[in-house]
Length: 264
Length: 294
Image (cartoon, rainbow over all chains, first blue to last red; front, side, top):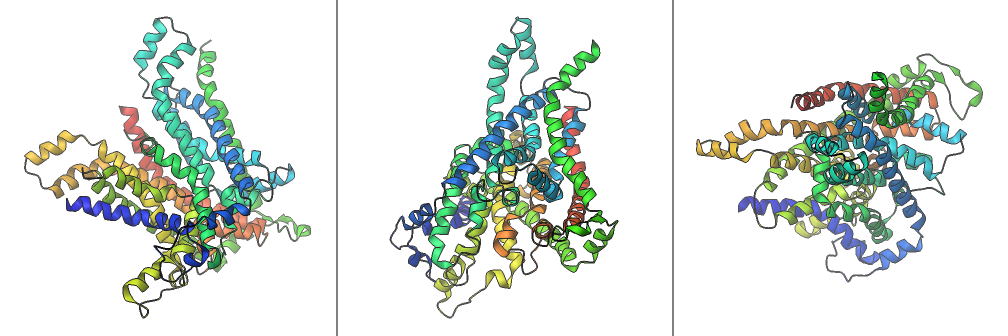
């Protein structure tokens, strides 16, 4: 009983900043910038109106295409790789998995300059497709890890039985592999989408006027003064909304994915 | 024939492998090369071989040296505190109580706010001394004469750490909760019947079972916090002693345009990460071995 109450208090403390951000986004700029918190000030859409007046659609659409594009490319590359690593064992499979994981430990800044120079010389600066390639490389290792553990759960006996019954590869994949692996593939896609949507460093260095993503757009508010607090909060809410909605909707998958299926 | 079959099995792996090598490893090799050159894009005439000069510069530059220290402090603090808080929350959420689902949803929220947006939220809506929520609440409790704190300028590193801990605790909690829920309930019940206290059960049953999950959370947390750019860039812009290595490298590249020195700093980041990784990989390798055994 007491512990349940404690859990509620902790939950409220952690969600409070998010709630405050949403509430402030619905206040007028004057109410948002008071020194005593204006909890009960009248609600208004002014913050959202001024935010949308600055036309945030291009960066939002850029983020959408970069995230969806790289998630699809990750699936295209990771599913066969995970399949090779799980269902049919490659010798030294753990070395290959190790290699994928070590690439995650290579800090982004360690390759940033050459990547920038390549983009510059090939005319790919400020181009979404270049970001798609980079986000794919950023998420591919995690995706291979996740999907391998999900695919490993496909019972081999059933696959063999299906093969004995004369089922072709396509049928086996559709009837046996897909139903078991789909939730895992969905969780992996969600995680890749979130990481791509959130990414700032590559986007900030490699994009500009045309291909700037939503996080880059948000950095425009870094030095904002108090007069724009409602607008800053509205911007933060709008940019976070896709991740919040997808994350809340798929909580269980997210938990499953984040525990990496590696420790089961 | 046998070789062909082997290749058929390996082939699906190759696209991902080749892609990863080309996009992640080649740039690092190039960085290694550039780190040995004198190359400032503002002074293109003087491009040439510099030997280890850039490395000497990195280690004698007090700014870069302090950003090494900042990176260590920031990573260790954020990972440890969010692991401990995450463990406490996971233990709380592992019990049945009214509205457990709602509390879990509330606790996940910070992790789902886009990092730059979260950093902006902390900088402007919470930390701002004049209209931020923190000082506002202090004023409500203590009145006009109450404490007035300049959160960011008085305690810049703590300000960055607090925002990051708030974002990463839910991540740790999710991983540890998955661990707690995979714990076989029979063993706990048996221990209860044998008269073990709650603390004993935690110490001798729960904690050993959670070890892998704690290690996994620590490993993934470290990988991401060592590389943190968003929070440092947004909350303090690297000022007041909060510049970590990723931020310093970024600055050397794009403000000082000193490609050689920035690359050397980048290589130093990698060496540091390898030290952490060697330690961490040993942890994950125990995960892998276990799986291979089963």
